[in-house]
Length: 484
Image 1 (spheres, one colour):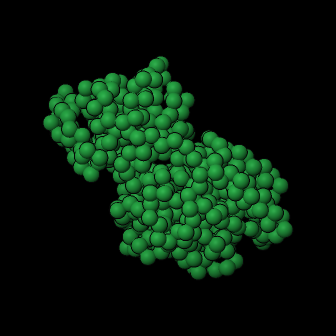
Image 2: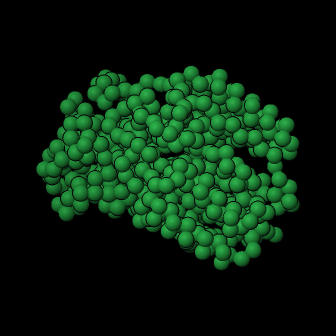
């Protein structure tokens, strides 16, 4: 059978965030593994919900020889430094050139990576890969649902597939789909393709494929894929201020006419849905007041969307902690607050101690949240994800602590990570279903593991760089208005 190279590089870049993705951020593990080279990829990615995991498993299942090259990711934040990009390229290129002859290359990229000097780091990466391997080697790319696909990317790759879900519960499955489409490319055939960008931006909270209009749009894309070779719909990442920040459609087919017709169908459907990408954003105090009146047998979930670390937030703002304490909320639990200093203080003091410190970012509305905070439980931050999104992920979030002030519990971590898995709470002895109010620093991914618990979900616009109301942002390079 064929020799198939597999590699990955993931970063979702929020250009409105002040932080930078440095090389060390790609080296460190968080919910996903740290930098992997060569054979390290095989055990580290086995059974994990990631595209490369699905690629490897599916390729091996049909008898291909998998040649693992390199894999790296860093949590969403501001642009990737040029030094980090070059270091990661040096590692990958070295592995690629040492791999020997390949019959195809499977790449897991994000599609919304911006570097200090490139509007599209993914396009830059693909261009370098194509230069090394030449024009004939089939390159198949799997991209994130939030990819900002550029026209040149569609020319550099022979096939691009985009996740079909948000929450992204089909990442590994998408890697498997990439392998299923390899036979035609290995036989020397090439697909015709059609690519179109939409003239508007979709705010992150309203991109979910669990809700309308995206649920129906994804069903249409799946139905279209039954008639063509593959149809993708990318919702785009509107927090990347780049010229190609946009939702897009990309259709592959046996003929150009079929590809063009399929792309036009999806494009028109997205245009008709434009005004439906909207919803209510609650202010912190009003959300807490409403939640306290609705408390019943199931938790009220407050999604702290603008501090979502999965969209470039720092996961450290204390606005909702202030609101909960001010309202004397009972049975409320917030996760995860990234405050390594507070976690260290809790571990130094021990369970039962009372910390007279303020937690969270001083830049929060109202500043950091003063205590006193009682240390109720400690954890090492090492556990395995059990929900659909983080399934099989061996997390390493550094020292963690469960702190309580009056009726408010806060789960503190040393590394930022989106609160999208119940295992994060159980690691510190909290059963999510038993809480009256759950505050989750997440935009949409939490819905995969928490939605079934909720009596109601409110999307809250508190402090943070993962801005939900795009009208508040000053774009310099992207000329598309917000939908809705």
